[in-house]
Image (cartoon, rainbow, N blue to C red; front, side, top):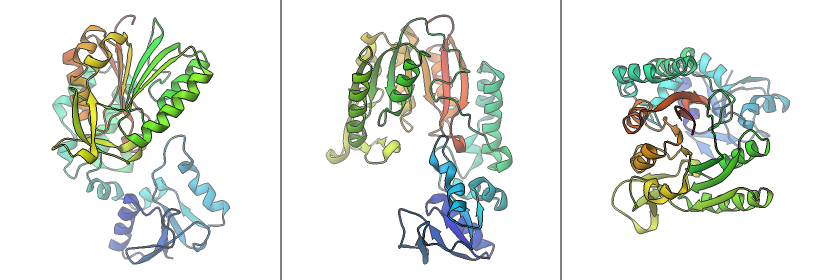
Amino acid sequence: MNYLIYGAGHFGECFHRILVQQNTPVSGWIDQRLANQMKFDLPIFDEQTADRNMNVIIAVTPLVNSNREQIKERLIELGYKNVLGFFEAVQKFPGVFSQYAQLEHLWMRKNHDEMLDNTSIQWLRARLEDNKSKNILDKLCAFRGSLSIDDYPEPDRKVEYYPDDIPFNFQSPIRFIDCGAYTGDTVEAFVELHKKNIINLEHIASFEPDTVNFKVLTNTQRELKKQNPEISFQAFPSGVWKCVDLLNFNQGQTSSSNIIQGEVINDSSVSVIDLDSTCQAMDINYIKMDIEGAELAALEGARNLIQTQQPALAICVYHKPKDLWELPQFIDKLQPNYNMYLRVHEHLGLSTVLYCIPKGSH
């Protein structure tokens, strides 16, 4: 029986390549955004017009707490007879992750050795504070080595940047720096925790260089301020870097907009700041960084802050393969008085976060 591939993106292309290699017939695609177009000389249907009797491979990676996890259920309700969910399809057609690694997206590389540094990994494992973190690191490294579903690191279902199994132990109200604030999703999550009396939130300063995202962010903060006047909010239309500068920027990539090093081009340049010169007087006690691979430069720009104020840190370590060990090593050199924890909040090892908690009260 012929297959339809749900999702005409990168993973869809990987499944298509494997099916073609196996001489398995592919009759088309299902993609709501691209319906009525063609891809690889095959028609793209929407959910309503595709043949319900064909096998369907869901080639869209699920996201935790997202309607992506309900695609299979929706297709079955629409009358599709044979639907393989993403992970079922990966089991049936091994090699998809290896195909995807050819794109060298985020931490994935064609060369497995680029994704692992055994000496540094062993250092990190010894440095991590709890067995859960060590087990997560083991699973991440096994998956990097095999790119097999058998070693797949499952995400947890906890609140990203404030999971309840990390001992934050804040002794004073939280004064939070959100680097890579996007449209305010983390801000909203923290305010919700505040309203539930899980945290005591006093101040949030958000940095977001993408102009479209920044506009939504400021609207989000404006509404949150109306409902929570006891919290102060700031928003800065800039990126976070190792110094104050003007850099190229890849705009319009939603949550993946990113700084590009190189010659400044006026149409795409954005201002960047360092936290030491911008936030030194804020007396902050928690910094989050999810800035698409600029984390090391931003940590360099927060050197004095980390050494003197020792804020809790939530640093994403999945944008580049070496981030997994280089960022913890850099932080340890700046300030060895941290307990370190590792958590994975999304599929494919995305939203892998290093939590650095000061020893003692903060």
